[in-house]
Length: 169
Image (cartoon, rainbow, N blue to C red; front, side, top):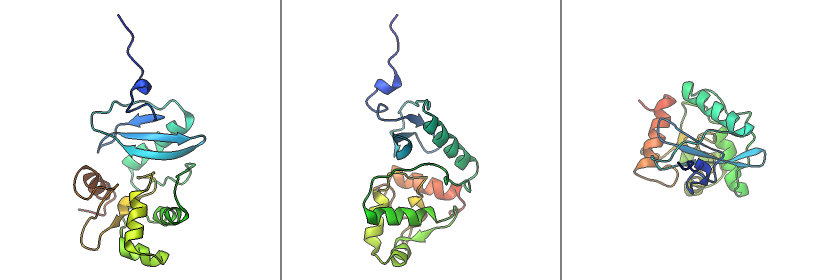
């Protein structure tokens, strides 16, 4: 009788400090030292991997709290998203948007003295969806894209998140 391989030896789950089951599908948590550096949406059949790092446990608990009450902030998590200065400005502005509120790409761009396309590109590059709530940015005429997807799995996640926060019926 052989031993089962560790989930961390699986090429899909190997880069993650944890793989968590969420109502919309699994997410992988990436850490960089003492900070959260990424949250990735993973294929539906990805095996969960419980957190064994203290920070991954904290992030997991914060995500569970958000699922229980969308008004729970992620304020105390140490974050290290890699991005350009402009992307970081957009991500900072996104963190100021309360749950249940949306803003259009154009309105956020006007606040930042930029263009809607540049804001959309920064949202697409966001390595920390959920914690940096790019799902709260919508198109002038509808939902808009999410995580580089304009119609499909990721936009369904965006719709789920907005419904969870009460921004969509």
